[in-house]
Length: 370
Image (cartoon, rainbow, N blue to C red; front, side):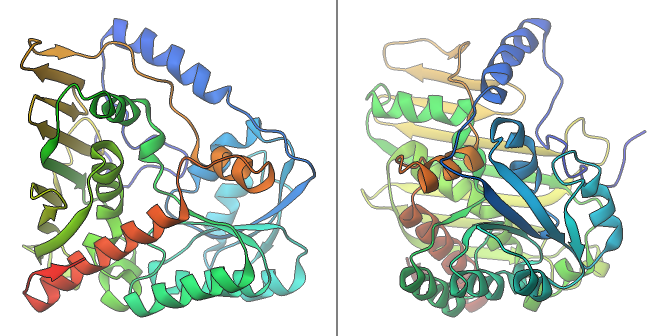
């Protein structure tokens, strides 16, 4: 039986059937990734505002962060708080229905916010005013004006800010970056990317532009970040198309989008996304990324992994990938131990600027400089 529900909060959205050999290799890598830990110079009191989206990126690594304590959680839906409270790290957390009350009453060091897209900017700015570090769901904001206000608030407060675009910490995409950096495929001239999801059941807030912001800002952030991270190239112009075909109950939510980018070296990139993956499909999503360079091609497909072909090498699948890491562990380590981060604030802001410009290109039906 195939479920129409999105994966549970702590499910891996990208698990897929694999061979025994790949399972053994993957299990070994997963063990190393789960063993990643960080010790902090003091206890860190964490509050969670909004319990939708990628909260597993916060909850899963906590076994490796013994100095972090979840002291409070907030959501409008009591059932979601009940679900999260089943996690051992959140079982003793105080529960709130209003995020402002949580901020007013609790003594905190950091906030993880994963609520609706439309309210995220206000929450981040409220945290900055209280000098609380923030790790936020994506996108940070659904308008360029709100993004500018976030930048100003963060700069004035001196807080640390991260965003849950964790795919760059996965072994497959680290391997792609290493291959590009080695020069093995030459200069990247073309990038192709895909993100395809089952529709499942979508929350009411996702059906309205003023609370959702559009499909492009919501899910393109992952692939836009990977395009830049793996290729080393910048995206400088965008033209997009977006629409909803069928499914009238989705209202403002697009279920098909396409964006063409110009690269800083004159190359091109194409990103297409949809919520049209059949419910019978074996996995929730189907992510793909292809980098074509002057000397070869490296490609990721969920069903295959990372494959490489160059002018000197016949096609091959990369058998040994770097171990995956944790965005949240990285953020804690960089915030409290002054380590360099695997995801810079500049990259976070740039990805948000790009996806908002790509959305605006579709809205205004014109090419935009980004």
